Amino acid sequence: MYDQLYRLLILNKELNIPGIGNFSVNRKHAGSDFVEKLIYPPVYSITLQKDNGTLTQNFISSLAESLNIPDKEAIAGFNDFVFNIKQKLLAGEAVEWNGVGTLTMSGSGTIRLQAAEVPVIDKPVIAQKMIREHAEHSVLVGEKEHTSTEMTGILSQQETKKINWWMVPLIIGLLLLLLIIWQFFVSDWKLSGASNRQRIIPGKQVPSFVIPQ
Image 1 (cartoon, rainbow, N blue to C red):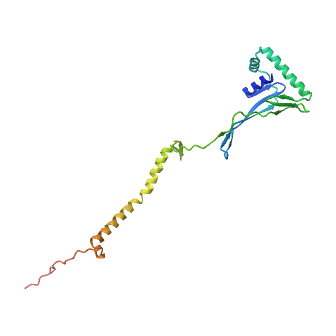
Image 2 (cartoon, rainbow, N blue to C red; image 1 turned 90 degrees about the vertical axis):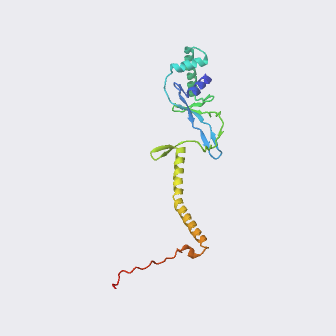
Image 3 (cartoon, helix red, strand yellow; image 1 turned 120 degrees about the horizontal axis):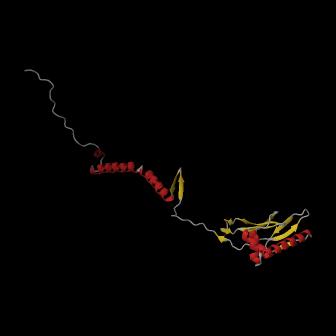
């Protein structure tokens, strides 16, 4: 009977035994070790809480099926199983249940469980960070959502605009510098070449009045 009830406990994650209590399988989440780069599997433990529940037809059918006996025989066998456990506990004996733990009764009549260590079948796995350079994901910018590809294009355009604003005055300055160098070159590198060398010839002065003869 112990083995069959243990299988039902593990399968259903809980087992209610009227007069004893409610056994529950609790799952502790997987742990991680960043230093060793390992992820540990979940850890399970069994607890006992006081519960005066009753047998359900689903439980009786499952137990009868596992024992391969009719439902009535399963009920009778289960009642005998519970009665024997309670008699041992009332007598001050400890009841060992393989895979579940040790049942004892305190002086006040409370049944306690010293849970057995549930074996961990899975082994730790190595966890390494994967870097996907071109993986696309969503990015929330203000109230709008963009993809990482769209944001890369937007930032590239902004960067291009930041770079281009000073190129215009730079180009104009270079052109002026080349013009000045060319001017000195054609004038044999003399400072006078940078000035206006055209001679100014004054025009013939016309009298503003005529003296009568």
